[in-house]
Length: 227
Image (cartoon, rainbow, N blue to C red; front, side, top):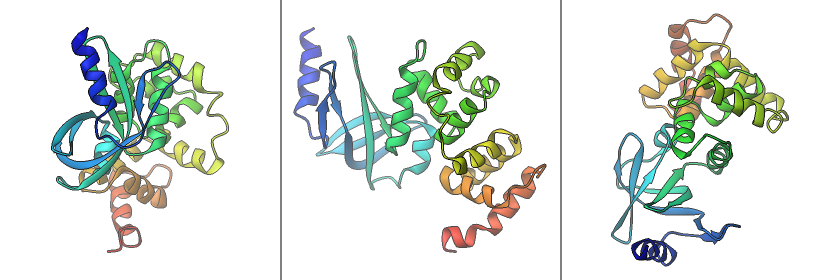
């Protein structure tokens, strides 16, 4: 127990940017800015004043990170357990918001929530919820069909007023598996998830093949990438 309080006090007076208390009294960090020193499949290490902080991240956030040894800003969520203090980092406030929404649902912990955000972008996940598509949600690791249905039941009303323009893009993605594979292919070529999604949306047509989508998207890359 003594070691636990030492850890909490260390975080309380550490060098992580802006901070606040939540309503339950647990100390929460808003964000951190530091040097990206290590990157793995599900976490990064951020250097702050020669102290390395391990921060768990989603695949979407990994795709948005700069090169190693560059400055990076991550929005944080802190999880305190009896035997562990963990930091979860997000490239955007919106991604952190939906992570917090997910862990508020019974049966979904931080690991499952990060699995959802690694399988889908925020907008894709909202699209599956709005379109009542538990089968797609259940593709995420650790999420079964029953849990996917519970997510939809609890959140469908919350996201029913998503902007029409957003729903059009979301609907395009969730109704065509080729779109998802084309986006993943572009990400593999070095584009971010956001860039790849925009590129594919510009050339999308019903029944387009993966090859057609990727080829068309690459042709549209000049105005998007400044090439």
